[in-house]
Image (tube, rainbow, N blue to C red; front, side):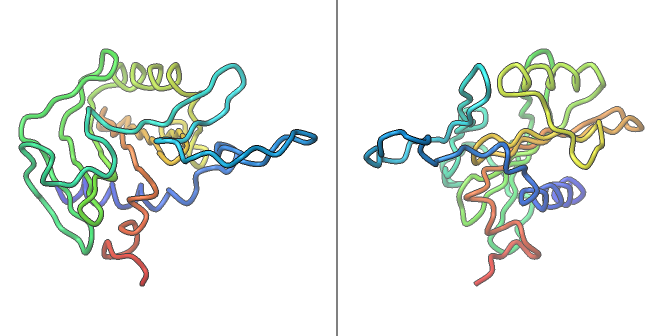
Length: 191
């Protein structure tokens, strides 16, 4: 289990690498009348030619920011400073035709902020990728590696990594505003 936790921590370090091009622009259009500030939306949107994409506000029904005690059947497997990682025994989820297992929920300062799941096989990898690309945008390759993919969607970074040698992959979601304080060494925020 510690390898999965380490992988989750390494992936979190990539949060700062999310391309700025995927961020929503808040600047008013040239010659447009100034708009009155509106209350912040529950989640951000990203503008892509042809469609508006809403960032995921939850994973499998658990909303970002949910306290750990509010998620049924969690078993804490590791604590690291302000970060805690928990699993639900026997939980198996599905995206498209792919089954996901070994679910690890990440909490920062007792708030749900990340999740990592595993899947087996190239067929599952391709099915998940196609599902995410249809729902959001084409994947971005991370550091030019075709097997490491990312979708920076508003405040959420979705990552996929696939190992040809092991024929397994991981799918991770990071809600950056809540996970950032725990992404550093030791899971502690700079104070």
